[in-house]
Image (cartoon, rainbow, N blue to C red; front, side, top):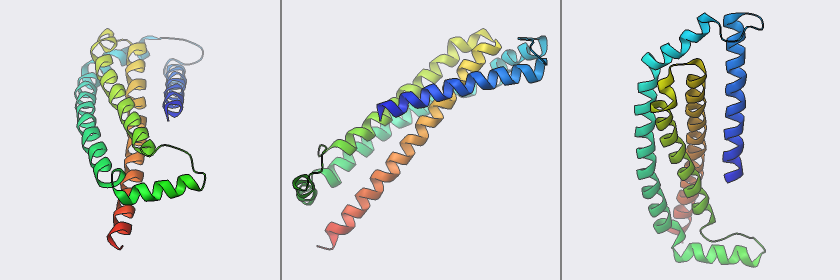
Length: 176
């Protein structure tokens, strides 16, 4: 999971650089780098977008922090600590399955942690690098925002999978 998060960060950085270069060439034409028309983007970002990104990602980071506690505690209590889950896990281990009993929960916690860090980092970037009001600083801030959104999508996917597993487990144990 950690490798996927780093790979996603690298992909976002590369896409951001490619988008910045492409936009620069389209707006400025040819091989010119940093013409006057393109340099006003940083000022537009500073006055219109930066504050919203700061408050949005700071709020999202706090929300994910509370979500992490709620989801992890409930999943642990409702699934992983149940006697029936222990029996299923032991039977799978006897058949040769590897992994720890709390492995999926640990993976979920790690991805949520990386998402929290990326959201808070994105918010901090808006109030540090974003203050330069230059095209390059706005590109960095937008790349960080894009990475945080990708991490949020990973979190939503993992939460969905874990909740699906939890409900299937609860359905199975309710019919015993």
